[in-house]
Length: 491
Ligand SMILES: Cc1cc2nc3c(=O)[nH]c(=O)nc-3n(C[C@H](O)[C@H](O)[C@H](O)COP(=O)(O)O)c2cc1C
Image (cartoon, rainbow, N blue to C red; front, side, top):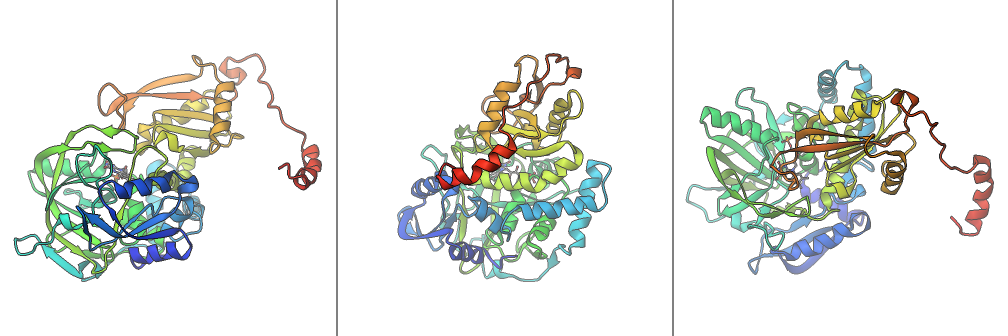
């Protein structure tokens, strides 16, 4: 199911009792965070919130703020029009199984073909709701970034940050498009930071423009079908078009319209489009910002985004999220990505049974992966493979477990980890790029990662004592006691 607009999605959340409307004025400065954080910490992710009267410096904004709209399993699935993200994971599996690929590259190209086959290619249109109102920054109008209800998220943040933007850029050499989610610190009426970290595609595109000494056109969308927002955050490999992916996910071609002041194309149904450019070589201090890690990230130099226009719907809703001490909304977005891309991991590593990135690990810090182990040191092969795959390179700790371990049950994982490992024998350390947000490594962007083999050890791994059996009840006894236990309310 595709949504006609972000407000269509918000209505759907309300219809299924997943949204609370707040009609009292609430300040964009810290107060929205306080209420949203309480929801994000509630079991299962609480409710989405629609602030009908957010205030900016005490004045009621013209635009409502929606937050935590993807912050539960159910809402995340609804964001991509499904009851469960497993449905799309299953489709992904079918696509990949259609013609078994021989390599990762072939796998992705097959996936692209599959997306095309499903008629998910974008369509070009000449106008759209995102242009119902056009504000050009040529000195004629007064509308500016200061009119958007951009949140001041945490007390020590360096300013207001746009937290749910989808950033459209283009490779100047190949013309390939990319959409990434990179936060934007508002500096003034028409300038923001552009926080694409060095490993991200936006940064790679930017580098090529800098080398050519050409201004880089950039368009930033807010709202529209949430499938775009999800696609921007999904760790797609460089070169796989997020617009195709979004079309595949929503089962409807994305309608693209050309911007007013640059030649980039954006979905015609989004709520806001911020058009502009990044000037080669221009950097400005960005931060501090209360980040995904649960800590404030330091002030660092990042590119500057200059706006040339804002176009929008008349009845636009401003989408936002907050990040901070987990669990937050982003956990549900990340978990959906893992589920959807698990078939791709399995394609490369057929021994993989399941994978989980628990909320406490804030995406990459902690990965639990279960495998069907056949041969010695297979756990190490899987770790090294994962460390070589896209953003999995950031995985700080990878714990490999046997197939019968439920990786989504952290308590069970910790039990296996403690019971099954000899720390010196079963660990390995590597050097790899680290996440730019990780404050622990001695130097930014580089660090060590640790792999732990918590699988049963084989004689061929030098273990000759005979691996013991897990203590389990006899199946017949379990079946016999089930009705009695249930009848007595004993579980
Ligand atoms: C709420 C949210 C905020 C994010 N903010 C940033 C950010 O400021 N900078 C960044 O490089 N990645 C950020 N990310 C992660 C990227 O969106 C993610 O790595 C994405 O895959 C990058 O796309 P790319 O590979 O096309 O560059 C954020 C993710 C989420 C869910």
